[in-house]
Image 1 (cartoon, rainbow, N blue to C red):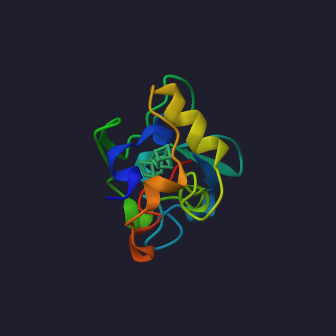
Image 2 (cartoon, rainbow, N blue to C red; image 1 turned 90 degrees about the vertical axis):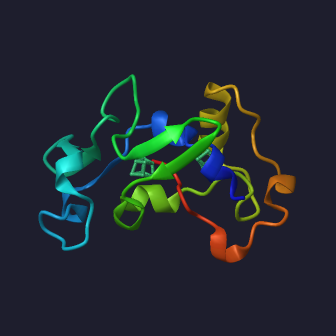
Amino acid sequence: MHPCLTCGACCTQYRVAFHWMESDAVTPGGVPAALTERVDAHRLCMRGTYAPPIRCVALDADIGRHARCTIHPHRPSVCREVPASWEFGQPSPQCDKARRAHGLPVLTPDDWIGVAESEKNPLPRG
Ligand code: SF4
Ligand code: SF4
């Protein structure tokens, strides 16, 4: 199974901010505007990630056991752009920091043995 599907830690660690043009208020199929709040004149963020304690409102998870993004097809670009550690051949400081914050071991190349290319990038992080 993809490691993110039993994790979700990064969705509880970082502000998930993005340009307001990604919102479905202006872009059909975009990030649900109802799940966002304003950061500044140009940016929104996912509700629940503006300030600590952070937990994205779109996260359905028991961290370290199971996790899913409830808006996966409509998640912000930043959530798609940061890979999990070793998902694509190199470590990810954001992934490692988030997992350590929850007492989870950082991922290693061995965690990807048996994960098909088509399964990758299911739940990445802000
Ligand atoms: S990217 Fe890392 S921290 Fe985020 S869900 Fe995946 S394994 Fe967990
Ligand atoms: S991947 Fe989904 S649950 Fe995680 S921070 Fe992004 S929008 Fe929120």
